[in-house]
Image (tube, rainbow, N blue to C red; front, top):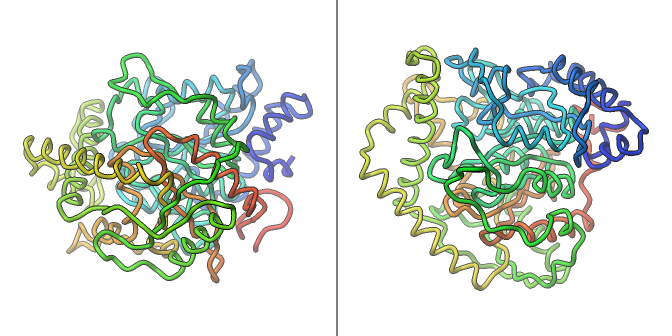
Length: 481
């Protein structure tokens, strides 16, 4: 059964449909793989093995992924009766009493949830190193970060514990760990997936949920299973023209692709990340697309300040909401120094400043939309540096905001898609000389995941990545160890 670790979720579901394996066999195999390598990686922090065994042994829905093991990032996605920590000591024992709508849809798709994964405290940093639960290590090099904030989920998938996993993205938190761990990571269009019943509009639309996968078809099929508005949603994404799975393998045509490796503020970009983008641009040109170096103005100091006002307020809103639910306020000792410092900044902003910040972000979105009248895709690095050594973003006691300031240098490209709401994907096309994956970041028009899936499938066929194995690999067979 360990051989199934090399199969994507679609293939595992097909085994169940053909009655070649039973759901409980897939689940027991995933549990064994988690127990085998999780002590080394610290990706799964809340095992749900008994619940998973009960679900897999019962009557599962007839969905696209019936019987396939899955993990939830321990942030936003609630599962009734199972703790949701948000990566914090303050909420390490918080237990929601209901499923979020996204989890309801995961279950209807037939997924069996076997655990919840590590995340930085309240999802603040692009690395998964919470003080409360310890760091998640990168399967490609355990001295390096798996990214964040969906780093636990990414490490679980990259190491073969499960075929795919849930993640969410408010500034790059799906695409960043996908890049760090050599996975395909799609951030859908704003409001493509529901966030209810607890949340309607997280951080004024910065946040969206989906997952990280090995294969493009898994990402498309998962989005098909979960997308669409929920009752009472404040707004929703433009309807898809047809199921996303039908875009996988469809001819993308000759796309107009702009590419750049330059950041808005002139932050240096590592040579490996520049090389990855240049390589991806050449590959696209070789596939027949029109490719040229061009880029919109990706931001300025005013935009950065506006983003931080909204991002900080959203994170601290979460902490305040949890305080209401738990009936007590956090103490300084219960949260990390960075979180406490950002809380101070957020509480110092006024309501007019918040609304002005939203206006600045919306104006920027319109400017970017004009750029996409002339181009179908914008290609950038996912990150400005290869996966960071663990500890790089740790804030010293005398400078609690160091981590977030340093993070801005690391992730100058991904947040602008959260501002505009556009879909974007990190595609694992490049590994550096040290054997670390370097993602390439493809951005589509608002509402146009279809073009991204078509292009992604074409890239996957031209340069397959699913057979690459990290040194820490949970299944049988070859690894890079």
